Length: 404
Ligand SMILES: *Cc1c(COP(=O)(O)O)cnc(C)c1O
Image: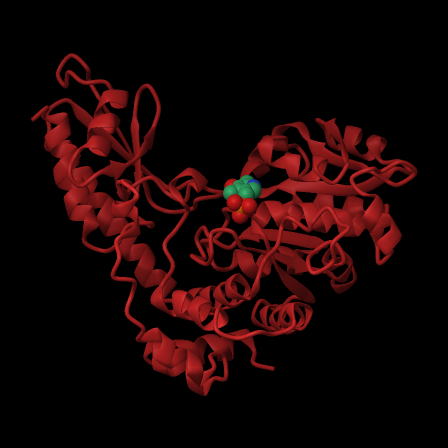
């Protein structure tokens, strides 16, 4: 078994594609696929769709992230042969667990799917009759305790399984809410600051009452360390999106943690049919794509990438600041989408356009540029751009603010 440090060293000391072969991480066959030409048909054009520069970030509505050629090669490779789905998931799960130094892992249908099958497994254990009963949780432990500040839309993944959410505000309330029907404690990493109970207390509470703890870390890569941190910290189950910072298939994700719980989660997934997870299918193409995306992500020079993002953001910021009346703020969200980010605002007596209009113009211009924002600001990140696109964005932002 390769230690992480050794693996990272091996991976970073060799040229990217060729280097993976010798490590046994990439089958040699993947190499030939890596030179496969991309499709020559422009499907989006044929369909009358406009593509755009993504200056916004990893948004499902914008189709998430872009996959590297190594990842798409793995997907293409997967499409050419049959294998047993369970055996593939077993082997890839073991490989991912080794890479991430955790007990076990599986490739899920996104972080959302990981939450559903994770909770389903917690409720059912290895009992396939109970699996077939869900989402009817009559007679089963079905309460999931969450903090009020963590209760955003994604908890629907838990409701889908038949869970009842018990929303609490304080540590006292949380401990009091635990009873014989409590199935799981669920934590949203992105909203860590919005809840009184922090990691250690949360995990300790779960351990004290023998209730599994789950942390949703969907958008918490980077930093790369987070892929290791939360399983080691003691969370029983940890979920990541595959198609955000890791840049794997957008419809894939990772469920990491305790082997008994992940084995139980797997009884809810295809090929088994009478389950709540049957529609959350992940086939071989996405499983391989997810594995290779993870390998590529771990092997990356993260410091260099960070520097690139900082430089890109500064370039766009400087360009915006060259327009009179404009102000910018460079910030890094502490949790979730933890990347250099830019907020642009202006004195609307000098720059006579609203942020909404400016964003619309960016999106309708050539090339189209997607941003985020609100009534007062435009928000930009560069981590989902191709290198070089920051110059186009810098130029267009200036033009729009100058109202040309
Ligand atoms: C994106 C996101 C999800 C959903 O993840 P998918 O991989 O799209 O299923 C869940 N929780 C949070 C906090 C997210 O940001």
